[in-house]
Length: 567
Image (cartoon, rainbow, N blue to C red; front, side, top):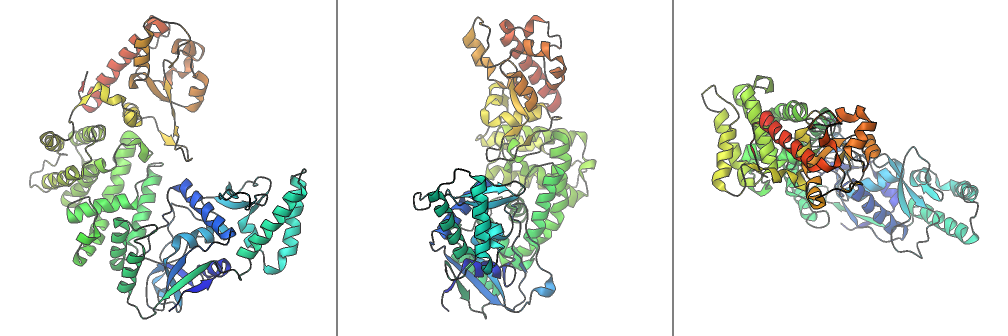
């Protein structure tokens, strides 16, 4: 067999016609959402400059192999379903074992959309003058791109005979939109348009190549090739390798887990718990450790992952909805400090349902309180070491598997384990709550009835925002300014509020703000008094205000969660 050169047009027209993804393929993995866009810009820029963009590995086979189509409108939360079993033996189908990232990017960006956006090219960009990939940009699909940009899916939808008509239309629109269009700019635009046409509409330029695997190979041999070729580039993770192995036993195993992951996100209004996170729990239940290592999983154990998943799905969803969301309104994974520290709570849900037929509604008040206490202390004190989670699993399993009817959550035993180990703290000091890395989690547990969410952008901003009740910079000159500056940045002076309140309040003192807008008092918690005429609200008594709020918060944590906070 030899490498076969192929044009972009030929490759894209083969996708979901002859070329498909084998069930063992991992999902699209080119970084986080905004990072994916950067990769795509570089990919398309290389194509426009006629740089070769690598080789695909393809297995043409009529054997009954489960496969799925590529996504059309790409979304990171979507995974196309495995094709019906009756189609698995489709004649002359080609399964893509290397090159998914490039093909998916090209397919979605040239024919459809990518995360609800359309990839566009700036016809006024001069590739000869600039070597960076700055000619490409994504725009929301329902909005008109900026002047000079052309939608690539619009261009790709044209036939070869439409070049003259398309050029007249595009250049004419550019002239009308850019009144000061120079002759040089028009030449650059026409040259860019011809290059786009040459690369994406014609098929003479072969920038891709594919290597066809032997038709008579066994699926297990092909899977071995798949793992070997993914030791470079976007290297397969251990979770991806294990998923691939399990999918040989149960072809839609990963698909089921993806659907559950999305269901968790829907039920919690935004908390994301990935398939990799779920596989980690399954590995703990099968192998006794959260450390996923496919080389330590025997062939005979693969079925155990499938069997235990059928038992885990229900208690897993219950944990996120009944406990994490209903008790704390946790709506985003970045509020919590450690996902791994939550695993003992999840396995408790699992063992209680599987061993004792006990669901969340059957848990005692004592158990619920112990679970809350564990949740807070394990997050705030980082009880997320692998050895902790592995041993916590054993303790919880033994507790739930005992013959006694007392199956309460064994918080004290878990705490004792940490205390004996001495690598992590078991208690809390007041200053511990002031770490920046814990800020959002602390604010959430202090205001469990207030929903926090994220605004979808690369910076992952929170909504609500944090208000310094007493501003960092007071307009009024006060005595002991240094003492004030020490206290103003503490958790005791912070409050999550709506953006509208934060924008309105800005750097105003609380006495001034609430005198003018008393209706917003209800949006603040742990206030020393509701009487804004009390002297404690004045600038001179700011530190006293903050210290009083500190005492109220510490007392509330003791009352709510039975946790002592040392001074």
